[in-house]
Image (tube, rainbow, N blue to C red; front, side, top):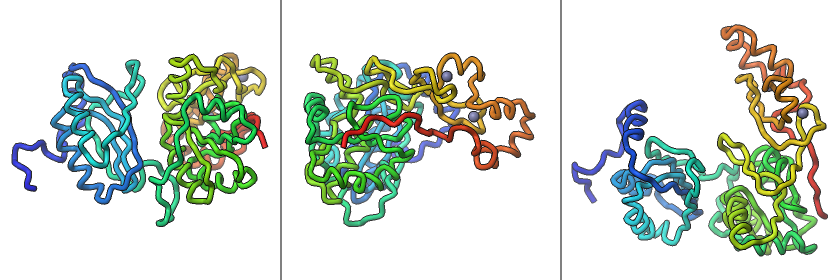
Length: 355
Ligand SMILES: [Zn+2]
Ligand SMILES: [Zn+2]
């Protein structure tokens, strides 16, 4: 089908300054939402074109990834076009019935100043290169109430599919929390890790569900039959607990990748300051030294004492002239900082595990 010349251009040729200005000038109320789906998309490029054509006309803004394995979108839609947007989405065979996660509070998701739709290898990087793996063959979902039953069930095993710095500040009671810093490693290790639990019911969870959904398919692919995952992840679990008055079995904070770094769910603080290793804390900070930028957990005391740096070395280095720092940057984390008392995103406490 040929495009008429009046169709919005596929490439947005405005400068980024212009995009920001245009976005700021557009004060229409917007609905912020996110959604994802693992679904076979045979031609991601043409799928992308289809989305851009329509969503640009609706005035949508956001960041959307498309791959052969599916779609992952964080975006907003002018409220006036929401119904038309929804109707169009539900009309696409790849997207029909897709559930949206609507942001309840302002600023829950990053705001956007352009519509960026990118074709990627994967919507969630997994390091897998296995043509026979069908990512759409996922396990069944668990509701929050069902998850709670799993927590108390000796015949069930719960696995946290997030990274160690996420599970360190909060996780489900009795969950296995693998000591990994990437999802690739987590995926690689889990089938082996669960070998001893082969006959148990398995429940996976992550922040919003997108990682454990893939992991559930991967475990099925590796011979595990009874694999389920928490629908909508910890984020939705917290909502369901509140709405249905359920007992909260998630201890501590849910790590989120925005300026808040964490959302408190349970009352308890389950982690310890990385600097003094004594004071309870579950607040993450990035080292003030931009070259280091290590993510660490700090207590108020240590933070004030160390002035926001992770180590004395980082504080000293930051005093050097910019030109010197630039030369140092390349080698700093590799050579100098390596010998420091804690590594990047290192876990401090071993969480409880149930065998
Ligand atoms: Zn401390
Ligand atoms: Zn540092």
